[in-house]
Image 1 (cartoon, helix red, strand yellow):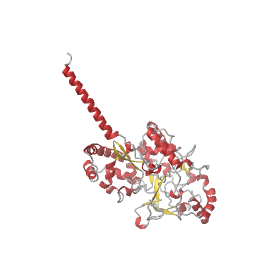
Image 2: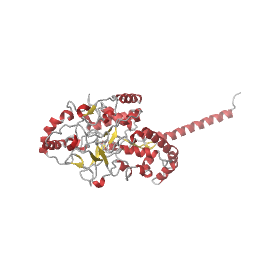
Image 3: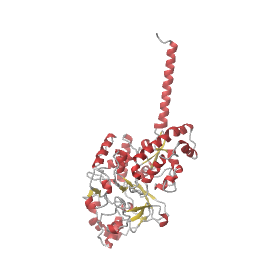
Image 4: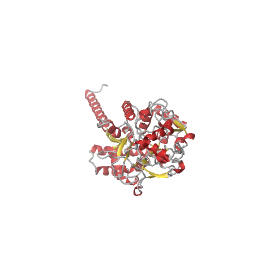
Length: 480
């Protein structure tokens, strides 16, 4: 029996309504969750490096208003007053977010991170001076472990709920009805779930017998071992300083290596692997940004020393540098940007032992599955010898930042300071490095070189020089 004309008309109308509803629902979902707005324009590439997106907001971004109110709700999980600033981030006057933080609308505004989070440090020539932000400099203040602790602890707290968070947001802005529902039923619960999952993966960071990183450091290769690859947690610890990221053209080339253990054989791999940790996934947009970043960081000059230099002493120090340091640290020299065997360099080997051939193989396989095209990570048996450009702003010294100044590094290991405070950014022009903070400001991190992974032994080159030669060498290194 054929359906009546009226019934057929009804089904056609119903189908049309369903199609319209589906289109409306699809458009609503696309607008609210996936519509990507163009990024703001930046005055120059330095500003873009500090605040521009590298593409990690969709996978690892935090909804903007959640990010804004978390320090207000959970100040008890921060190391001090001042909100995010207590974690050592650099917040320039007139900017909405700290250096290294990005804001991008993908459906809704999201806060992510970029390379400047770890590679834009500051310095002051005197305590009452506004800090100078130096793109490409290793940050000496960022407390990465503290940032993990804050986000993970907040997510596992019962106060991380829609009522509490929306009430706090309501004191700052008036969300639309749709946005309130979006935050209540989707963004807040999903964000909490993601952070709790990350907290479970990152529980090893806070094990009581694992040394703290302190500002300006992270556990660079245990992070991908556990977060990216998912290997079983072992007893190794590999806390190390962030590297400088300027003037990379002198570091990049056939046979030259990156990272403290020489694990990374190409600039492309450095950027790709770092971007992965910030939530970036392969694609044309990232490839374009990767090319731009590689050019910017390759051409970015090291900062000039901010104090007067004694030219006579510096000229005398140049010959000492050539005799004592150039073989391992002058661009193009035989050992520069190559690995010096651990038995020769003699520095703390904990960071070296945290990365294994098994981890390298597993990480490379994971990167293939993610369809990242980059030269494979490797395993070496020593630490690489970097060029010393801008060395005056790369304190503390050695891979783990266990030696406060260059003068201290020229002392025999048993004469180096066994402990000092990290995180202060006032330049020490006499000893070359950062000064110790005043007693009244000892909210900084006390590095104890007797703790695992913090050893300040090794690298005895130049320790037998006369006091006069040491003075001249220090003066010359200010010019690099």
